[in-house]
Image (tube, rainbow, N blue to C red; front, side, top):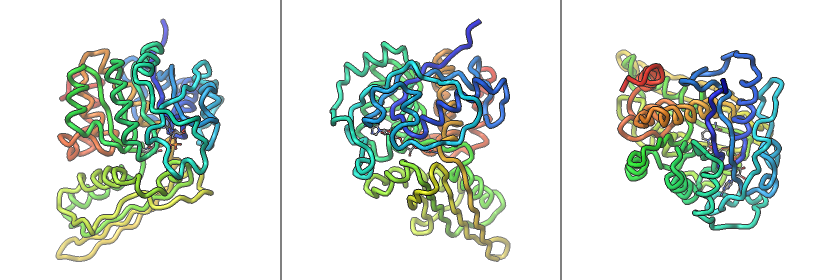
Length: 368
Ligand SMILES: NC(=O)c1ccc[n+]([C@@H]2O[C@H](COP(=O)([O-])OP(=O)(O)OC[C@H]3O[C@@H](n4cnc5c(N)ncnc54)[C@H](O)[C@@H]3O)[C@@H](O)[C@H]2O)c1
């Protein structure tokens, strides 16, 4: 019997896409080892189930190349995924995407855009349909508001699921949710909450403060890295929704109130030699029994892009399973567990509750 696959279209062939392709190759060849996975199986879909069938970018170093070659082209960096990797996506040619607001000023210092284009909506919908995409994965750079909305519209028109990995609010907004719900399509997002990243860890910490009766007075989370995502984020004008997404992910996990001046969370700087390694510095200041002070400082070092891929392979497989079952309402719980800025209705649920509901749903379709 053929292994069931999830046919994905990749929008933006950067480091996250590279980690996704190499991770897929790794799990296809890892002879069944589930190490490093949250969900070895999602229904019939194993960890190697994602099959890229279409891809789009704007970088001259990537457009026109086969996807496996493009994953290592341009400014993409080694992402540290090991094993004997057989190419994934080698038969897929990277197509020219509309530029819109995708490539910002910092980007253009290092990347040559293959001729600006406003996009041909009908033509792109036809490409998505011709490739028989199940789910589109949005990996555009931070600040791509217009381009992300354009692609969400393409997903709707083509009748495919949409996983919004970037900090542009789509799944969080009712108007988009309503349109996807009416079409019976999953909408998962927004902004990947990395597998074990700064957001998840920071949420665990502030929840511990809440649960143990400690008042959290002030907290910060400073993040540095050396990949193109961090370079692009030096353009501060592109960061508003990234800051909002990261900040609300942490404040939503704390039961008390935190003043705006008492929380500082965001991408902080670009340090080239770090490459795809990301470092996060987290500090929490609070008061415990009788007002006695408590301070906590944590430093986290993680591979940035694989940390996102471990989440996206779950989101894409769950999106496909939801379509198979005709039950896409689960997208809110996937978003709550796997993304920083899920729909408001579930944003304040604890990670544990979101995860338990999801595990039950995957196991048998019940659980909401
Ligand atoms: N752990 C993580 O890495 C993580 C976590 C949360 C969110 N994200 C988000 O995921 C997104 C992708 O991250 P990345 O590290 O792969 O970034 P990247 O900069 O390596 O890749 C972005 C890709 O998009 C392409 N691009 C630019 N404009 C485009 C356009 N208009 N149309 C199509 N392609 C275009 C670029 O050429 C590049 O190949 C970013 O928004 C990032 O913030 C990543």
